[in-house]
Image (cartoon, rainbow, N blue to C red):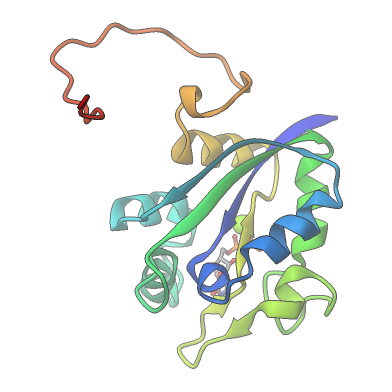
Length: 168
Ligand code: UDP
Ligand code: MG
């Protein structure tokens, strides 16, 4: 089944200069990258992304982690598209707990558990089709993706402020 999945290289992955390494590992899947950008994650985006974990004891620390409070304040967000994209990327990422993850998986090789108990596992990958749709729509707007993944609507906005390049 053709699918799309959200991948985040989390702040610890960027801090450890693992971007090239992770992208090379993901290229083994032969999936297509259909969107990519750098994001400075604010608390609102962090809360929305991890809404289903809001009652967990590690939630506040997790929000700090994904915002990059302890590392670099940025995340690389990508969408991978192709046959069985969700499982292929999850298999390469490895188990949530980096100590339990297969040692050749990305999380097994590079993740750690902090003294505060958060799994700094370097990479996020959507877990299923529903999660992928919710997460892709949270992190990307339709015009940031080079193919159409979900139905869109066109609206005309008035008095919308935008920053544009100055023409010299
Ligand atoms: N997490 C954690 N401790 C836990 C479970 C999760 O620190 O006991 C963190 C970890 O960074 C994980 C993220 O919360 O990647 C999201 O958790 P989820 O259960 O969705 O795992 P994933 O889908 O990322 O494998
Ligand atoms: Mg998950």
